[in-house]
Length: 322
Image 1: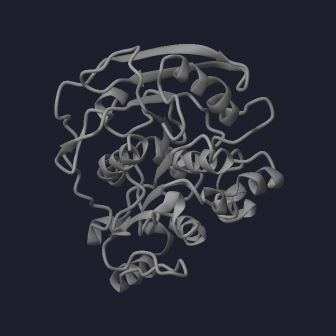
Image 2: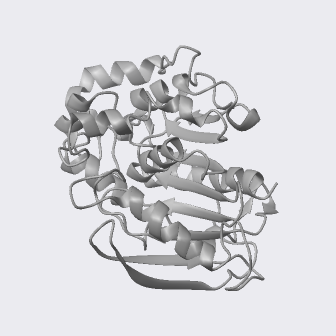
Protein backbone atom coordinates (compact mmCIF):
# COMPACT_ATOMS: atom_id res chain seq x y z
CA UNK A 1 0.00 0.00 0.00
CA UNK A 2 1.31 3.42 -0.87
CA UNK A 3 0.47 6.88 0.38
CA UNK A 4 1.31 9.21 3.19
CA UNK A 5 0.60 8.40 6.84
CA UNK A 6 -3.11 8.54 7.36
CA UNK A 7 -4.14 6.49 4.31
CA UNK A 8 -6.99 4.02 4.48
CA UNK A 9 -7.37 2.13 7.75
CA UNK A 10 -8.28 -1.57 7.68
CA UNK A 11 -11.96 -0.76 8.27
CA UNK A 12 -12.01 1.85 5.49
CA UNK A 13 -12.13 4.82 7.84
CA UNK A 14 -10.61 8.12 6.78
CA UNK A 15 -7.93 9.82 8.82
CA UNK A 16 -8.28 13.48 7.89
CA UNK A 17 -5.72 15.97 9.21
CA UNK A 18 -7.38 17.84 12.11
CA UNK A 19 -6.69 21.30 10.68
CA UNK A 20 -8.34 20.31 7.42
CA UNK A 21 -11.41 19.07 9.27
CA UNK A 22 -11.61 22.24 11.35
CA UNK A 23 -11.43 24.45 8.27
CA UNK A 24 -14.02 22.39 6.45
CA UNK A 25 -16.60 22.79 9.20
CA UNK A 26 -15.69 26.39 9.98
CA UNK A 27 -16.23 27.47 6.39
CA UNK A 28 -19.18 25.20 5.62
CA UNK A 29 -20.42 24.32 2.16
CA UNK A 30 -18.53 27.14 0.49
CA UNK A 31 -15.24 25.30 0.96
CA UNK A 32 -15.83 22.10 -1.00
CA UNK A 33 -12.79 20.95 -2.92
CA UNK A 34 -12.23 22.35 -6.39
CA UNK A 35 -12.27 20.26 -9.54
CA UNK A 36 -10.73 20.87 -12.92
CA UNK A 37 -10.99 19.55 -16.46
CA UNK A 38 -13.64 17.20 -17.82
CA UNK A 39 -14.03 15.32 -14.53
CA UNK A 40 -14.72 18.59 -12.75
CA UNK A 41 -17.61 19.34 -15.10
CA UNK A 42 -19.64 16.67 -13.39
CA UNK A 43 -18.90 17.64 -9.82
CA UNK A 44 -19.63 21.31 -10.41
CA UNK A 45 -22.66 20.65 -12.62
CA UNK A 46 -24.26 18.33 -10.11
CA UNK A 47 -23.56 20.44 -7.07
CA UNK A 48 -20.87 18.31 -5.45
CA UNK A 49 -18.24 21.01 -6.00
CA UNK A 50 -19.05 24.74 -6.26
CA UNK A 51 -15.72 25.76 -7.79
CA UNK A 52 -12.36 26.98 -6.45
CA UNK A 53 -12.66 27.16 -2.70
CA UNK A 54 -11.50 29.37 0.11
CA UNK A 55 -10.16 26.25 1.80
CA UNK A 56 -7.72 25.57 -1.02
CA UNK A 57 -6.39 29.10 -0.68
CA UNK A 58 -6.03 28.77 3.09
CA UNK A 59 -4.13 25.52 3.33
CA UNK A 60 -3.21 24.49 -0.21
CA UNK A 61 -4.77 21.06 0.27
CA UNK A 62 -5.40 20.66 -3.45
CA UNK A 63 -1.85 21.48 -4.45
CA UNK A 64 -0.24 18.30 -5.77
CA UNK A 65 3.23 18.43 -7.35
CA UNK A 66 2.89 17.43 -11.00
CA UNK A 67 5.51 15.06 -12.39
CA UNK A 68 7.30 15.74 -15.64
CA UNK A 69 5.18 13.95 -18.22
CA UNK A 70 7.61 14.46 -21.09
CA UNK A 71 8.17 11.10 -22.83
CA UNK A 72 11.61 9.50 -22.74
CA UNK A 73 11.67 9.36 -26.55
CA UNK A 74 9.63 10.57 -29.49
CA UNK A 75 6.16 9.01 -29.14
CA UNK A 76 5.18 6.25 -31.50
CA UNK A 77 2.48 6.65 -34.13
CA UNK A 78 -1.12 7.42 -33.21
CA UNK A 79 -4.18 6.72 -35.32
CA UNK A 80 -7.80 7.75 -34.86
CA UNK A 81 -10.98 6.68 -36.54
CA UNK A 82 -14.67 6.00 -36.06
CA UNK A 83 -16.99 3.03 -36.15
CA UNK A 84 -20.73 2.61 -35.82
CA UNK A 85 -21.52 1.08 -32.44
CA UNK A 86 -24.60 -1.09 -32.46
CA UNK A 87 -24.37 -1.27 -28.66
CA UNK A 88 -24.42 2.53 -28.33
CA UNK A 89 -26.57 3.13 -31.44
CA UNK A 90 -24.29 5.89 -32.60
CA UNK A 91 -20.96 6.47 -34.32
CA UNK A 92 -18.08 6.65 -31.86
CA UNK A 93 -14.55 7.96 -32.23
CA UNK A 94 -11.45 6.17 -31.02
CA UNK A 95 -7.68 6.63 -31.00
CA UNK A 96 -4.84 4.11 -30.71
CA UNK A 97 -1.38 5.13 -29.58
CA UNK A 98 1.67 2.92 -30.17
CA UNK A 99 4.85 2.92 -28.08
CA UNK A 100 8.17 4.21 -29.43
CA UNK A 101 9.71 1.87 -31.97
CA UNK A 102 6.43 0.12 -32.79
CA UNK A 103 3.86 0.45 -35.53
CA UNK A 104 0.45 -0.88 -36.56
CA UNK A 105 0.60 -4.62 -37.10
CA UNK A 106 2.84 -5.24 -34.08
CA UNK A 107 1.42 -7.57 -31.45
CA UNK A 108 1.30 -5.70 -28.15
CA UNK A 109 -0.50 -5.70 -24.81
CA UNK A 110 -3.35 -3.20 -24.72
CA UNK A 111 -4.57 -0.62 -22.22
CA UNK A 112 -8.11 0.71 -22.63
CA UNK A 113 -8.36 4.22 -21.14
CA UNK A 114 -11.89 5.35 -20.22
CA UNK A 115 -12.71 9.05 -20.15
CA UNK A 116 -14.49 10.99 -17.43
CA UNK A 117 -17.85 12.77 -17.44
CA UNK A 118 -18.06 15.32 -20.24
CA UNK A 119 -15.03 13.78 -21.96
CA UNK A 120 -14.41 11.75 -25.09
CA UNK A 121 -11.66 9.74 -26.78
CA UNK A 122 -9.56 12.87 -27.29
CA UNK A 123 -9.16 13.69 -23.59
CA UNK A 124 -9.45 10.38 -21.74
CA UNK A 125 -6.11 11.06 -20.08
CA UNK A 126 -5.10 14.33 -18.45
CA UNK A 127 -2.32 16.11 -20.29
CA UNK A 128 -1.41 13.12 -22.45
CA UNK A 129 -2.35 11.71 -25.83
CA UNK A 130 -2.50 7.91 -26.15
CA UNK A 131 0.92 7.77 -27.85
CA UNK A 132 2.48 10.08 -25.27
CA UNK A 133 1.06 7.97 -22.43
CA UNK A 134 2.81 4.80 -23.57
CA UNK A 135 6.07 6.71 -24.15
CA UNK A 136 6.37 7.86 -20.54
CA UNK A 137 9.20 7.27 -18.17
CA UNK A 138 7.81 5.95 -14.89
CA UNK A 139 10.15 5.69 -11.94
CA UNK A 140 13.05 6.66 -14.17
CA UNK A 141 12.56 3.82 -16.66
CA UNK A 142 10.64 3.57 -19.92
CA UNK A 143 7.41 1.62 -19.82
CA UNK A 144 7.46 -1.85 -21.35
CA UNK A 145 5.92 -1.65 -24.84
CA UNK A 146 2.14 -1.61 -24.92
CA UNK A 147 -0.55 0.16 -26.94
CA UNK A 148 -3.31 2.36 -25.54
CA UNK A 149 -6.78 2.93 -26.97
CA UNK A 150 -9.43 5.51 -26.07
CA UNK A 151 -13.06 5.63 -27.22
CA UNK A 152 -16.22 7.72 -26.88
CA UNK A 153 -18.37 6.27 -24.10
CA UNK A 154 -20.91 9.05 -23.49
CA UNK A 155 -21.91 10.34 -20.07
CA UNK A 156 -23.75 7.28 -18.79
CA UNK A 157 -21.08 6.06 -16.39
CA UNK A 158 -19.95 3.23 -18.64
CA UNK A 159 -22.96 1.14 -17.65
CA UNK A 160 -26.07 0.10 -19.62
CA UNK A 161 -28.89 2.57 -20.29
CA UNK A 162 -31.90 2.07 -22.57
CA UNK A 163 -30.55 2.26 -26.10
CA UNK A 164 -26.95 2.90 -25.00
CA UNK A 165 -24.62 0.25 -23.59
CA UNK A 166 -21.02 1.53 -23.54
CA UNK A 167 -19.77 -1.53 -21.68
CA UNK A 168 -21.10 -3.82 -24.41
CA UNK A 169 -19.43 -1.52 -26.93
CA UNK A 170 -16.11 -2.11 -25.17
CA UNK A 171 -16.37 -5.89 -24.98
CA UNK A 172 -18.22 -6.61 -28.20
CA UNK A 173 -16.84 -3.99 -30.56
CA UNK A 174 -13.75 -2.06 -29.41
CA UNK A 175 -11.76 -4.98 -27.99
CA UNK A 176 -12.42 -7.19 -31.06
CA UNK A 177 -11.40 -4.24 -33.30
CA UNK A 178 -8.12 -3.95 -31.40
CA UNK A 179 -7.47 -7.69 -31.36
CA UNK A 180 -7.86 -7.83 -35.13
CA UNK A 181 -4.91 -5.43 -35.12
CA UNK A 182 -2.85 -7.68 -32.84
CA UNK A 183 -3.49 -5.61 -29.69
CA UNK A 184 -4.45 -7.22 -26.41
CA UNK A 185 -4.68 -10.69 -27.91
CA UNK A 186 -4.09 -13.50 -25.45
CA UNK A 187 -4.96 -14.12 -21.81
CA UNK A 188 -4.09 -11.31 -19.42
CA UNK A 189 -2.94 -8.94 -22.17
CA UNK A 190 -5.72 -6.32 -21.87
CA UNK A 191 -5.80 -3.82 -19.02
CA UNK A 192 -8.13 -0.95 -18.25
CA UNK A 193 -7.46 2.51 -16.85
CA UNK A 194 -9.80 5.39 -16.04
CA UNK A 195 -10.12 8.72 -14.28
CA UNK A 196 -13.20 9.83 -12.28
CA UNK A 197 -16.24 8.44 -14.15
CA UNK A 198 -13.77 6.47 -16.23
CA UNK A 199 -12.16 5.11 -13.07
CA UNK A 200 -15.51 3.73 -11.99
CA UNK A 201 -16.04 2.37 -15.51
CA UNK A 202 -12.67 0.61 -15.41
CA UNK A 203 -13.56 -1.08 -12.13
CA UNK A 204 -17.05 -2.01 -13.37
CA UNK A 205 -15.62 -3.55 -16.55
CA UNK A 206 -13.13 -5.62 -14.56
CA UNK A 207 -15.82 -6.77 -12.14
CA UNK A 208 -18.17 -7.81 -14.95
CA UNK A 209 -15.43 -9.41 -17.08
CA UNK A 210 -12.60 -10.55 -14.78
CA UNK A 211 -11.50 -13.16 -17.30
CA UNK A 212 -11.03 -10.49 -19.93
CA UNK A 213 -9.21 -7.83 -17.89
CA UNK A 214 -5.61 -8.60 -16.94
CA UNK A 215 -5.26 -5.63 -14.56
CA UNK A 216 -7.16 -2.47 -13.63
CA UNK A 217 -5.98 0.95 -12.48
CA UNK A 218 -8.49 3.58 -11.34
CA UNK A 219 -7.59 7.20 -10.59
CA UNK A 220 -10.07 9.09 -8.39
CA UNK A 221 -12.90 6.72 -9.35
CA UNK A 222 -16.39 8.17 -9.00
CA UNK A 223 -17.90 5.60 -6.66
CA UNK A 224 -21.16 6.13 -4.79
CA UNK A 225 -22.34 3.80 -2.05
CA UNK A 226 -26.10 3.98 -2.69
CA UNK A 227 -28.49 4.63 -5.54
CA UNK A 228 -30.07 7.52 -3.64
CA UNK A 229 -26.65 9.17 -3.30
CA UNK A 230 -25.82 8.66 -6.96
CA UNK A 231 -29.23 9.77 -8.18
CA UNK A 232 -29.18 12.96 -6.12
CA UNK A 233 -25.77 13.91 -7.54
CA UNK A 234 -26.29 12.77 -11.14
CA UNK A 235 -29.67 11.41 -12.19
CA UNK A 236 -28.20 10.20 -15.49
CA UNK A 237 -25.50 8.00 -13.99
CA UNK A 238 -27.72 4.92 -13.62
CA UNK A 239 -30.96 4.05 -15.38
CA UNK A 240 -32.58 2.67 -12.21
CA UNK A 241 -31.96 1.38 -8.72
CA UNK A 242 -31.63 -2.07 -10.25
CA UNK A 243 -28.97 -0.79 -12.64
CA UNK A 244 -27.04 0.68 -9.72
CA UNK A 245 -27.22 -2.62 -7.85
CA UNK A 246 -25.94 -4.48 -10.92
CA UNK A 247 -23.03 -2.06 -11.30
CA UNK A 248 -22.24 -1.32 -7.65
CA UNK A 249 -18.45 -1.36 -7.47
CA UNK A 250 -18.42 -2.01 -3.73
CA UNK A 251 -20.76 -4.99 -3.53
CA UNK A 252 -19.15 -6.66 -6.55
CA UNK A 253 -15.54 -6.14 -5.44
CA UNK A 254 -15.15 -9.87 -4.72
CA UNK A 255 -15.25 -10.47 -8.49
CA UNK A 256 -11.72 -9.02 -8.61
CA UNK A 257 -10.22 -11.95 -6.71
CA UNK A 258 -7.87 -12.73 -9.63
CA UNK A 259 -7.44 -9.25 -11.10
CA UNK A 260 -4.53 -7.05 -9.96
CA UNK A 261 -5.96 -3.71 -8.81
CA UNK A 262 -4.48 -0.25 -8.32
CA UNK A 263 -6.72 2.52 -7.01
CA UNK A 264 -5.61 6.08 -6.26
CA UNK A 265 -7.64 8.82 -4.63
CA UNK A 266 -7.14 11.99 -2.60
CA UNK A 267 -8.20 12.58 0.98
CA UNK A 268 -10.29 15.59 -0.05
CA UNK A 269 -11.94 14.00 -3.06
CA UNK A 270 -15.76 14.02 -2.64
CA UNK A 271 -15.75 10.36 -3.73
CA UNK A 272 -13.27 9.37 -1.01
CA UNK A 273 -15.91 7.59 1.16
CA UNK A 274 -17.04 5.44 -1.76
CA UNK A 275 -13.48 4.64 -2.79
CA UNK A 276 -12.64 3.77 0.81
CA UNK A 277 -15.61 1.38 0.96
CA UNK A 278 -14.50 -0.21 -2.31
CA UNK A 279 -10.92 -0.62 -1.10
CA UNK A 280 -12.10 -2.20 2.15
CA UNK A 281 -14.22 -4.67 0.17
CA UNK A 282 -11.40 -5.77 -2.15
CA UNK A 283 -10.14 -9.35 -1.80
CA UNK A 284 -6.88 -9.54 0.12
CA UNK A 285 -4.67 -10.42 -2.84
CA UNK A 286 -6.24 -9.91 -6.30
CA UNK A 287 -4.14 -11.66 -8.92
CA UNK A 288 -1.92 -13.10 -6.18
CA UNK A 289 -0.69 -9.67 -5.06
CA UNK A 290 -2.20 -7.19 -2.59
CA UNK A 291 -4.15 -4.31 -4.12
CA UNK A 292 -2.06 -1.19 -4.60
CA UNK A 293 -3.78 1.67 -2.77
CA UNK A 294 -2.37 5.14 -3.40
CA UNK A 295 -4.30 7.42 -1.05
CA UNK A 296 -2.67 10.80 -0.46
CA UNK A 297 -3.30 14.53 0.02
CA UNK A 298 -5.13 16.34 -2.76
CA UNK A 299 -8.54 16.80 -4.34
CA UNK A 300 -10.50 15.73 -7.41
CA UNK A 301 -8.32 17.86 -9.69
CA UNK A 302 -6.20 17.61 -12.80
CA UNK A 303 -3.02 17.95 -10.75
CA UNK A 304 -3.88 14.83 -8.77
CA UNK A 305 -4.84 12.91 -11.92
CA UNK A 306 -1.57 13.86 -13.64
CA UNK A 307 0.47 12.88 -10.59
CA UNK A 308 -1.09 9.39 -10.63
CA UNK A 309 -0.94 8.63 -14.34
CA UNK A 310 2.71 7.44 -14.57
CA UNK A 311 2.42 5.03 -11.64
CA UNK A 312 -0.93 3.73 -12.89
CA UNK A 313 0.46 3.04 -16.36
CA UNK A 314 3.55 1.40 -14.87
CA UNK A 315 1.31 -0.83 -12.72
CA UNK A 316 -0.62 -1.99 -15.77
CA UNK A 317 2.57 -2.53 -17.76
CA UNK A 318 4.02 -4.76 -15.05
CA UNK A 319 1.02 -7.06 -15.12
CA UNK A 320 0.25 -7.03 -18.84
CA UNK A 321 3.81 -7.66 -19.98
CA UNK A 322 4.95 -10.15 -17.32
